[in-house]
Image (tube, rainbow, N blue to C red; front, side, top):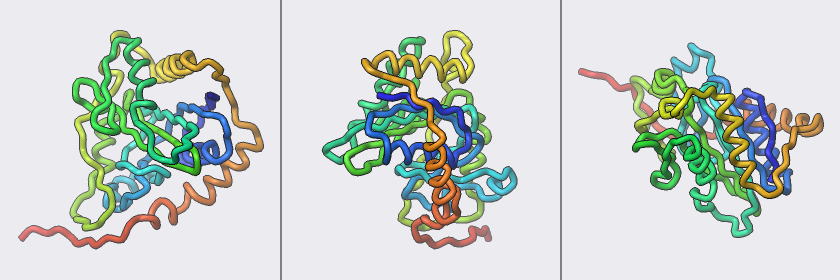
Length: 252
């Protein structure tokens, strides 16, 4: 396994890195990364039915569609993302526990008992702190998840709240969950950067031949191209939305 060092916080670039890794790296990969304030949309979601457009415009928030399915999430620098890319000869979605176990195991080392709830959520005392999704490409699988560490919960709810409009569509709706930050459950204080380093070391230590990899200049050229031509475009982030009907909601 190779561990991709990534300190970038541009959401368009980060999703381009994921796609580049998936389609060009032969070895299994692992990456930790953060996004500046933005909203991430699942592949099969209707963007306009998931976001508070007034809030998005007011705060100039990037909206980025993922390769994978799942629900919409708000990101700030209090979130930490993890990505695993592995060979998948059967070309089907893998058991989510295979990829969430390293996270659960790492948290246990610092006294936090987390559980896999349902198919794709990680919880602490019944409160969600991580959502996960997967994407298949040829004989490989990409599994990624978000971790609420010290996210602004007020922004989280405001950015995804749609007012005065009801949508009728066949896209995937985000399911509201009771959520919590990892920082609220720490036995002793830890910054997000310290947690990121701890999590990386915990996962790398479980691998026999793990090595650290930094993207080269050539890698970055390809990543930037993917970002410019796909993840930063209106066509991908809004134009890919499923068909829908909408109407203004009025009270009489």
